[in-house]
Every structure is written in C-alpha cells, then in structure tokens.
Length: 103
Image 1 (tube, helix red, strand yellow):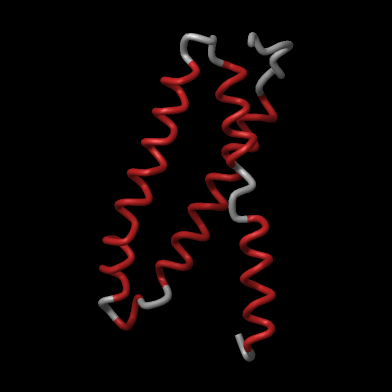
Image 2 (cartoon, one colour):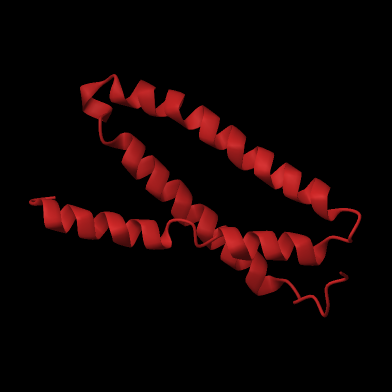
C-alpha cells in the first residue's frame, strides 16, 4: 500500500469479511445434525480448522525462505479461501434448509 491510511482501510475491509463463513457453517452444522451429534460435529470442524492453522506457518515459511516465492503464501492463501468459500456456497445452495432445530 502506498500510504498508512490506505493500508489501514484495506486491513479493516479485510477484517470485516475474513470470517464471514463461520456463522453459516456453524449454524448449518448444528441444524443438519441431530441433538446428540452436534457437539461432536462442532468438535470435528473446530479441529480441522485448527490443524490447518497449525500447518500453514510451516508451509508459508518454506515459501518465504526463497526470494522467488516470497509472495506465494498470499496467493495460495487467497486462492484456497476463494475455493473454500465457493464450495461452502455450493453446499449450502444445494442443500435443503432444515425445518426446525430441536432445542
């Protein structure tokens, strides 16, 4: 970014949309599974995201160690996020909306 104000603005825009998938994914997971499956489903999705977050610094470090690949982590991460969001959208668009949630 050419100046601090523009960098700050882009950062805030990024923060505003970076976790848009979390509420729909959690509500869909809770609505689709039965009451006895909900905590297990939430745990599995949480672990899967944690494993990805734990592995990614090592992969990014490998890219950053080579000057030719210095920008690659940004493109890989952005590309994976776009693919993830599109797959999540496709899954939600094709699925039938649950009628009610047992409480």
